[in-house]
Image (cartoon, rainbow, N blue to C red):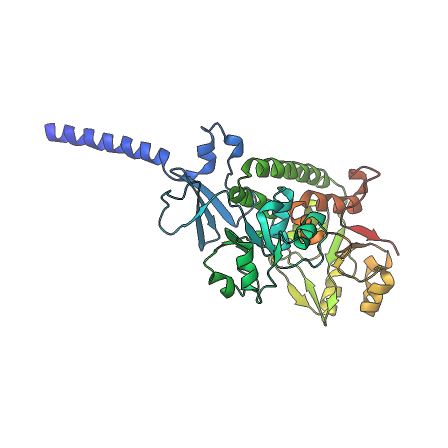
Amino acid sequence: MKDKSIMKKVIVICMVCLAIFANFSCGNVDKAKDNSDSAQDSIASPKYATGYVVKECEGVRLVDVGKDYHFALVTTDDAEVPEGYTKVQVPIKSTICMTSLQLSNFTILDAHDVVKGLTGTKNMFNKDILKRVKDGRIVKIGMEGNFDTEMVLAANPDVIFVSPSKRGGYDAITSTGITLVPHLGYQELHPLGQAEWIKFVGMFIGKEKEANEIFAGIERRYNELKEKAQNVSQRPTVFSGEMHYGNWHAVGGKNYLAQIFRDAGADYVIDDEETSGENLEFEKMYALAANADYWRILNSYPGEFCYEALKASEPRNELFKAFKEKKVIYCNMKETPYYEISPVQPDVLLKDFVAIFHPELVEPDYKPTYYRLLNK
């Protein structure tokens, strides 16, 4: 009996020890921040983004990107990290951005000083970035698949942000030994999910507080307007895209763009479970969208785009109801920094669409940032 009593006490003590250990071991950063004086600086696992997860583990921030990439963000080089994690000392001082989406995160965080390299400046509007490229503070490393290794080394980045599912061609930079950090913002299907990657970047550059505050503002403005748009009595229909090289690329019903349409109080004509979409023949697209109320187009037209130009590109375009009633929603990437900054402005994109679908929900003198109705 005495042995059993001793055994029970040992079990109880072990259970208490396990509970204490669990309290101090790895867990979602949300739990850790409750007892921290710097709670506002903490980065929680995202609410909308699905491409990364954040945990705190014994003073080390663990960041899992997708299923295959694992990083341990540390503030001292001698910090111990779990097996399977790549150590990154933060805040980083220099990096290379491979895409406009990645660059938009640094722009909104006022962190151009950290950017030391870009793939190029085509369709670039940001005057500060252009100035830095001109005076050599930022170097151009070439396009994906044809990187200039010497320029990569000249940028001397602590890490390089990459998009692993795109064209790739990273062998040249992998050989440099520089840590490659996947940025999967382009895969997000929720508009706020894409914007939430500013918090991901914030962790690497030491701007957690700024990232939290900026995203909180984006989230609030987006959801407030979305709520207004969901109460409308009539929801117009909308389709998107153009014919290119004999096919019409139509984004799927679960795409980022389709979600913005729905949040703006409209219905996208394609209601499937696809994300990226598919290439359709004109006849198939016409069957889906012949009577849609609006038609959204994004392109880089050289000059002033108009209905005549749209008809010239494909004579059958005039058959759509949206063409006949002059309800084409248009954005020219040669005139606006669409890909350069819109990924972190989903609230602005939403407002542009709401102003067209339901103008009574925005101020009468609202001036669109990206999209406007094509009137001639």
